[in-house]
Image (cartoon, rainbow, N blue to C red):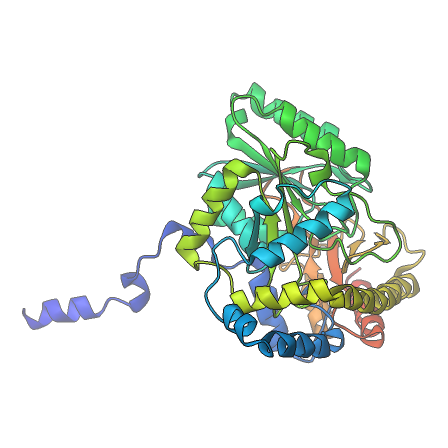
Length: 433
């Protein structure tokens, strides 16, 4: 090899010499990662962005007691520290399904056989995307919806397609009209699922009414002609209700267990660090998800599952839920009061009063662009607060996204810091209009 050839070859940059997969490239620059990086880079910012949970309310003593009980029994402790099954800890699956059946007013018979435990509900959503979606396929989503799931869809080269929502949830007529449009174009085969966060949704904080729940399941069944259209019911915030009575999930409206994929998590209602989520899945899809999960991890951490089973069985989970409801209700009220103090009476400014969950959805005058390239985003950071631009929460296609919206989270900050953050946001808005 002569010296000129050697020089030419070695001049290649490391970046140009590496070829990632298409999915690797598709996963880059997800909005949540960008926002978290900004928050970490500026620790003095009052972040009303990330949906983190309240640090002071984490169940340290409950987890300590449950761990000691598990490990004080040698055989039980050893089993918890061993590998588990890919589908998940049988005791935990049983107690999850018993709780779900009681809450929904349905029979628990057969539910545990199609219940899977995952490392948080996001893993379950990822497995479902891998199992049912090919490149170019479509999932109908609320406008707006959970931004991380849209990143998951983009990662498998599927398309998130928005349908209209109002204060009662996804509008059935909009779902139906969208399906009809796909049919008229000869592309109904692309639509594989309908996705919604049906309790105190992320980002708006609204819940789907019982009538809408029934209608969504009925539409999915009726339009499942040449292929099945699943309904993905994301129930991450079900336990975090502050004002209203619980309502049955979409699973209660799927009498044959054929169309609804229900996902849940203990990250919001107990502890994100334990990282336990779950799903109840139609039988024909269950084994596919187990096989996919087996290729990833052979099963989620078994000790976390055994620990969560003990916590649920002992009643400690319900104790923690009551603690969180009290803490978050106070923070929710602080944010609503702060918004009223800073924006009350102002033209074209409105916000949703959530009855549960962790978020408040704020709409500003249409001329105010809240996105990362807009003047407000930089001005808000300069004044010491961070928010999630609402445009991140709108699907890639369908109903146009609103560029004057903001998702605010009250989960992490204290009431005083929430007031300070909202005042800074109001000052930023005032500075640019």
